Every structure is written in C-alpha cells, then in structure tokens.
Image 1 (cartoon, one colour):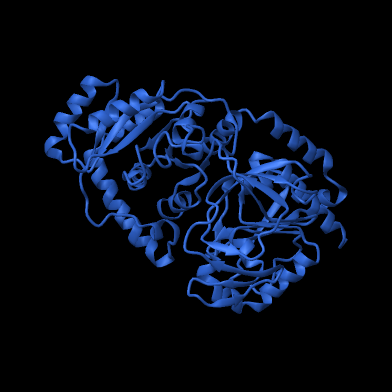
Image 2 (image 1 turned 180 degrees about the vertical axis):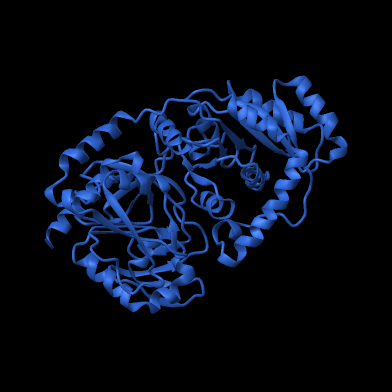
Length: 469
C-alpha cells in the first residue's frame, strides 16, 4: 500500500528539529489531515508529547530493536488509515550505534522504510556555509534519502538567494525557512513533565508556531513529497505469525471463558510505555486494566498479572509512600506469585525505600530488598542486549531480548538474572531480578525484539489465574 510519509532530521541535536516537527504536526492537524507521528530511537518523551499536546497518534521506530521486516510492519500497522505520517529523527542524521555506525540511526530508519527526508539545518551564525553542510550530508551515504531542506533561524533577507544557490547546485527541494522566533522554545520539562494546567498554554504556543510555518514553509510541497514515497509492504513477519499460532493453539479452557486481565500502572509517576508493547500484549490475548499507584488503594479486581512501567516515581515519592494500602497490595500480590514486569521506574517502586527528588527517603512496595537513590549523572545510558543467565519468567537460559536504559537513580540491589551488553562496545554487566514470576530491572524492554517473552509472561498469568478457579 501507499503510505504518505516523511522524515524530519537534522545534522545534530539542538538544530530545532523537535520544535519544527511539532509545529509542522500542528499545522497538518489544523489542515484536517489524519496524522500519525513517530520518533526514531527508544525515546518515550517526544511521542508522549505529540499525543498529549498535539493530538497525533504517535509511536517509535527503532532499527536496533527490530529487523527490517518488523520495522516496516510496525510502521505500516500504525500508519494505516492515516493521510500522512511524520517521523522525527534522533540526534544527528547519521548517528547510530555506539556513535560509530549508521545502524540504529535516523538514516537507517529512512532506508528501511523507503522514506524521503527533509534535513533541518540550523543557520544561526552562517549563510553560504550552510551549503557545505548540505553538500556533506547529501554525499556521505548513497542514497542519502534527503530530498528536501528547511533552513532554521535564517533571515528572510537572505533566504531567496540561499534557496536559489542550493537548488541550483544540489538535487534537492528547499521547502522554506524558519525565522528566529521568541518565546516558542520547548524546554525538556515541557516534553516530559507536562502538567494538565500547562497543556493549553503549550497548545497556544504551538498554534502560533504553526501559523508562522504556514507563512514561511511550503507545506503543500512537503505533503506532495510525503505522497511520493511509494508503496510499502505491511506483511506480518514470519516469526510473529508463529507466535500468534502458538497463542491460538495454547489457549486453555480458562482463557476461553475469562480474559487475562493485566493491571497496568498509568499516571503521572508511571507514564513511559511503548505503545507497540501494549498492542502486542492485547493481540496475544491480554486485557489491560489501568490503575494509579498514586491514587488507587487496591489493584483492579480479577487481575492475574501486573505491569509497572517506567516514569517519574522519584518526583512523586512522597505520595507513593503515603499510599500504604496500594504498596501493601502490590507487595502481597507479587510475593504471592502474581506475574509482574517492572521496568526502571517500576523497578524503583518495588524497592524497600526510594530517595525522592526532594532528597527524602520514602517507603515503597518492599519487594526488592534495599533502597534506590539518586546519582549526579546518567547510569549505563543507552541500548542493551539482555541474555538470561538462568530460566526465568520472560526467557529461558541463554535467550535474549533488547532494551534501553536511561536513569539518574541507582539501586543497592540491581539483580543478576540478566547479562547486559552494549552493542559494538563489548561492555557487559549483570542486571535485573528474574524469577518464574518476575522481571524487575532498569532496562526498558521492547517486546518485538523477542515476542516469545511477552507470550511467556501471559502464560504465567494464565497459570496464576488457574490457581484461583
């Protein structure tokens, strides 16, 4: 099928890529287009911002997590029925694994999905020199996939001349410029810590930006470029077909009469979850039941599994600690054998104590012995391949899946069930608690890197459910 699609990338972080992407998304929504948005890489925050503030359906595309066939399948699945899909790049366009490979880069995603790319070049402090930047990016890889360019922070006084020179020298379309704009910067707290009262103000800001971009960008040409991307296969990967077959054949009498209700933590403290993970669980037969560790005093009824996703428990440590009823309910459920996946923030919550952002030490669920505490720098940041060192809920010994770590907090008790390895760097360390009914660790998991893992989780949930029938 033909899925109109386009990527907005940049030579480096700090080029204005996120702000301009948000402005373009807002302009497309204002025009009435059914718009899907994606973020290259493992980041949760930009997709969450796109959904909450702009109102687009958003997800991730990551070529470290998934092979070519799966990447294309996940894109087509999310883009189906949409008028246009906009993909925001990550870091510099060619920056990939370990900083030394294009694998996992925005460029790698563009190649796998056969997608035209618009390069956003920050022109602050330069004029003609931007053409050398453009030349280098067009020629570094062949094909570069770069079909257009937007000049950010360029004066309208010089734009027409630079546009003519660029289009005269390179096989590329200049789609416009973005003048220096005041009071429209998006701080990191806006992207990751959007409070309900801030949303309307942010929508107003992006509305103003969209109006500016309608004047300075050729939006019609951008939409046409997306429409020229060509057809894309959406066939379900063979290994996923096998997992679905196992699911149908493995359904016991219990699942034929009762759904597998999974308690899924979702509130301001627990908000980092890959949409594709949740949808895969549902396709495998789960019914996700949301609850809030901040406000609920008990787990949802008739649940046979628990997911504690990542987020910001450290910012809400006092409230989490004060909710003794829910902490007790979770401790009793997990120690009583309810299957549980707890990633990063969820892992912190399972400790006996958590140091909050305010420096205070607060009681948590008490499943993991020891405390979690703040550090002054990121710990073990980046992609990881995880290999099971013993038989456990998600994996058999020697089996692997992939994930990502990003945390300023550390644990006195990180666990030793998994061997984590950095791609291309060879650095390894032990991490995570793994038992027949528990995965708890800092790495965020991407289920499509090994769909057998979530299927194993649901099988354990079914076993747990049978104990009470």
